[in-house]
Image 1 (cartoon, rainbow, N blue to C red):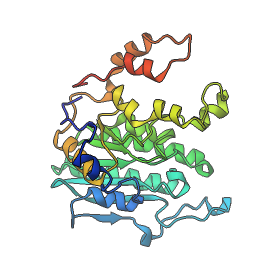
Image 2 (spheres, rainbow, N blue to C red):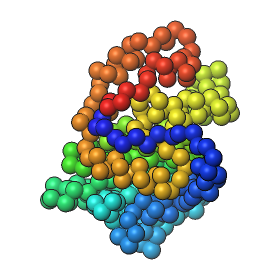
Image 3 (cartoon, one colour):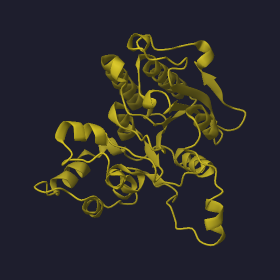
Length: 297
């Protein structure tokens, strides 16, 4: 990966410790507020917002009240003076899950960003991934949307950076976590979580002996932001603070495209997996030691 300005967490002391209690929480914002918080003041405009009344046609059939923006917020504007589109999932609506309408909105936004980038107006994309993955009532449609989003991400990342943020306790799981794997940069907070399968799904399929979804310490030790950063699966770790998240996004966008994307480092990850002893349960600390973050990777 390209070199990124150091943005890791340092232990506060004295006045810094006092100020830490006064910070503005990014996690406490809703999806729309988070999106606009990242955009330069006065430059943001929402695309296909609630007044356009785009809602899933499938939720009513499940006796679920739909939402006019389908729980997906698209904001176009500038970040650090450069063109960008922010895509935020609303965690309070259906757990931030992805459906047909929200998937179509994301694909359209990425395709427009790619078109502008090809026409000499580089437009980055920032995903605020607070999602459990595909919406169950729209399973096949949601999976198709994920595939289309991945395709659009792969096309856009040739022209402009793509940043994924996992900040809140809902985390990023399921199909949408694939976007983080394809992104140019991943930013997390200690409260954030990132993984393909969520703890509840793993427990349901393989039993509590495999993963106890009630063990919160275990969940964060495996999927949490600190672990993901320490093992090189996230690029920046910051506190839950609006200004720190904004500064981190601006820093990675300013650094430009990485030399090589994480998803292209196939040999590196094959070697990592080959060194693991899978005959016994691997402790999170063992994995952290085996997959130590390497600067510049």
